[in-house]
Image (cartoon, rainbow, N blue to C red; front, side, top):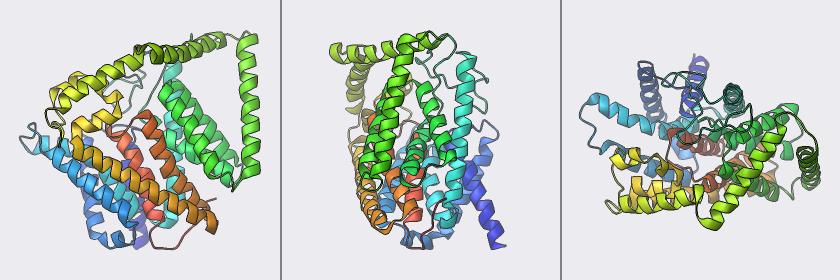
Length: 418
């Protein structure tokens, strides 16, 4: 009976994870089922609170303080006039709840299986992104339904003659699972499943066509290799050699061989890099837009510097580009207190993950090593892409990595990964 209940809870947490990372949406009236699940599982967490004492204290405390503070801000809005609007406001808290579901309700021995399902969700996002990319700039599905079109305001463009830029919400989770897959290949062994996963995730990252995410991916990979260099020195040297050879070969093909659509892709990539250097030198384009966004954000910030402005403040919705600069977005929506809590959470998580990384390294604890690097990589990725609390599916990604980390490093027996 207990095992059956645990299985049901496991799959319910998986379902809410899929919703939170944007694999699919819950339009009305199905959203009320998600509401019921979140409330029910939150009640189960309260009932199951004895496990809280076994979790790494500092991370759980930091997340809890940030969650309560965000809840106060979310509920302190002029738009809440009845129960329906209150529930709608509460939905922005669901990614914060997800952390507790993963940390408290998933059994430690089920973590590898949970990771497999996350990879499956990300793979479905890759497939959807590729299909939408070849379909073009017209949405494959009608907006407002179960699936995101992948075309955000101001980002619709063609990469070459037959591929469009597509950035699905799932891409943020794909970023951290790419780090996990590559780390597995470097630390454990070359397993075909993780090779295919890493390549698939790389396709989605490329189709997203976001330079900040490309840079973040490269930096995170350099960091991962630096962390485990002493652990797998020969393997990293081999990977670097193969990667360098592959890049040289690709550049040669792009420069010398005419393949339909490939020349357009080469030109598009060249222009993308040139735009970046031009923007930096002249403070125009995307960089200029971000500078203006920061200036506008500072004007909004002055309205309520300590606690931030109302989440439903009109200027936030009128200027969608405010979400482009994550640091100032956190500042204007949560204030000085909120950004301090975010900084504290990231500091505590980085410090804890680093200590657990060294402990796992010495104990040859493979899964512990992978989860520690996942947290470090997650924070580095999102610091570079400036993604924090702008969207629920970004917060959900933190919930996954931090939740798995806290669950695994609770004071219980350790398990492995195959």
